[in-house]
Length: 243
Length: 243
Image (cartoon, rainbow over the protein chains, first blue to last red):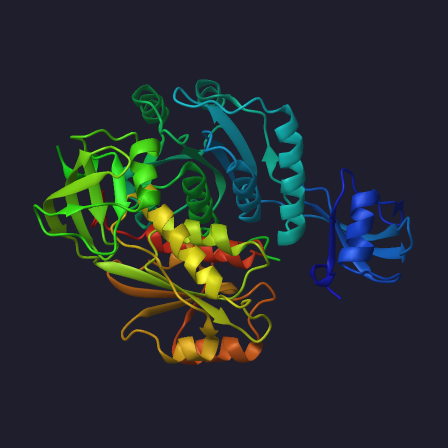
């Protein structure tokens, strides 16, 4: 039975070595025995969200389920995406995070922009992490979306990964379908906040080498543009790591 | 002042002729005078959601606002998208409709599939229409998403528009970025329900000429795949009709 056929899929901070056992926390226990209705002897897939995947078996399906690791493998991501995103309208960040995570973006860096800042975010980052874990489970991905605490846009632009391909969502940019998303390496997308990027910010992005791409004829909300960019990037996968 | 610079954007069933007046309903009146804070003398854009756009002026900004049509123009859509979509998990249809509408899809045809049917939908179709109107306003589009009542998949496949380009979201399909979305004509996307398409349904789609395309390495929820397909299509616009 291949690893990917296991119906239960758990994220754990650290994957135990082969032959070792793990007692999942209360929420994961509920997911295993109630949501997936896994029984003793059934397979479970574990991931640390950093590319490690383990085939495990449910030893005990009681109130405190116990899982034993059978086999550990390490997957490499041949490509990854970082999304810099201005604040969408209130109440729209949660599902954006779920969708961006499902589409396999590696990291979401919320950015404070001239025309809109993210609200104070400590509690949010914790909730966002939970949403990212839920999306990972759903999409059976071994790469957990890293949702970071908001920083000013200038700071984010000042600390971009080296050799990344840079794109900014811009209604006046080149049609997305005319630009092939990179099939390897890091792609960075920048999406403005609900009121849009200020001219100075567009200038910074341009100076930093961001290529303007147009994702739709329509004016898109921030979260829709974030999702459209993530989808554009996700489409460019050569299928490496397909589950 | 160009038509597109008007801050208020209203959908109306029928656009009056040039020089004629219109009294918006209560909801639109609230939107005009409270949300947009439009004042007498300010411009308003009207659309019928079928490609007709009018420049108008707010004559009276009181409790019963009055709008006078100054100029009417007719826009042609050089391309359009029809999305056939199986039922997503409960509670996930509303935002899918909002996003699909924002991305400029012309029609959403919910389809009943072997493994999942849409719940009874009369009330929903009315609500979905309201969501589509809100998205049209937001995205300043002159084409309203037509959200149809659910039909069986076989029926939808049996009544496809002629000469349409057909695509089915399929993790084993060709990478989306390797397939150029059509720059004109009708594109039809098929997305399975939450439990996926049955084998027989995949067979029907194949027999009808649907091209399988892969939108992500990750397993996507139905609504995420619907959005990813819509974004894939939206990216392919040559910019005709850009506002």
